[in-house]
Length: 136
Image (tube, rainbow, N blue to C red):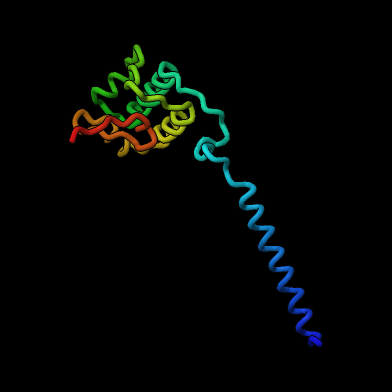
């Protein structure tokens, strides 16, 4: 024989167990598919270097002018003529390029000063999708 309060408490526990299981199933059910992490559901499509570097040059030039930067990198961006080739074995996706361009558009003048420096220029990690291997 069980006490009346015990049955009620058991009912609350059962409801909590069901709610917890439902939350777990929902969480697992909406998780990204393996291989889809970071691509926002886009089908993998190779980046077109000509389109990417033309857009990048336009953003670089706009940022250089807006930040009043005068460097060789700024001159090259504002006088863009042709896209460089990607390194051998480098196959970035369109999504990689979109993330890079978004970072460049939102970068501060201080950040851009580092990206376009004549000596010791840096690159945003979002744009380093084809890192060069360092020699040992």
